[in-house]
Length: 335
Image (cartoon, rainbow, N blue to C red; front, side, top):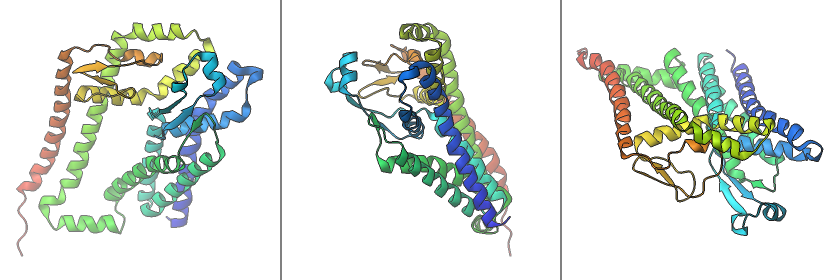
């Protein structure tokens, strides 16, 4: 395929990935603006708010500064007027990463993966820069370099990974084929990349599965706390819908927390907090219903969850060993 056409298609992929992500943030916020704020809505703040949600979902920390009027109305002390929100709703990043990986793989099948990855990355970086430049927000500020670099990396790294995998499978008449020729010259190393990739995929899938299972169990056992926090919020149907959608965006984050909890180190909800099988140390936790899933005093028996992570590693290693075993038995040809 013509390299120019590959570059154009990759750029379109980047535009779609960014547009869908922003639309996913903009749609529920528009609903809230219309039904929740009504005639008092400041429509000029809708776009900056949506962009900030999108940036947070792409790992950009938000530096929050609450106004004096809000502090007086809510009774929040002045010391709590400034804080940083860095807990990302990973659903945005996951969507961008998956879309970027598919874009890179398509560019590899077209025979121009370097052009495709480069065009897509540059386009996504330009879109991130445009959003940062047009989304001034006095309440939620971001550092310019973070708002450009972090979303671009969320797109570029999966795009490059997808392109490399596609080029390895289909060939590229270039760098990847040269690497395969070099490996073919050493039979013991020929199967290493494929075995490593398969083992890595099994390990990642296993960790995600363990994390998702823990979230499901926590939802069943601590569902009452989640419902109680929903009721304590005293929101109407619109507010409940917005909260539910926001928590859905955090579902991948909860899965990562579950995997980290099972592995042993656990996770933190804020500065100076720890949630781990060995013990939990929490301060004031926001009344977000999903946070009701966090165990207040986990049992020490939960340390046995680490065996699930060990099992995932064992399966991944066994699969890699099984794929490498035939290559070990091959005898190099003698000239």
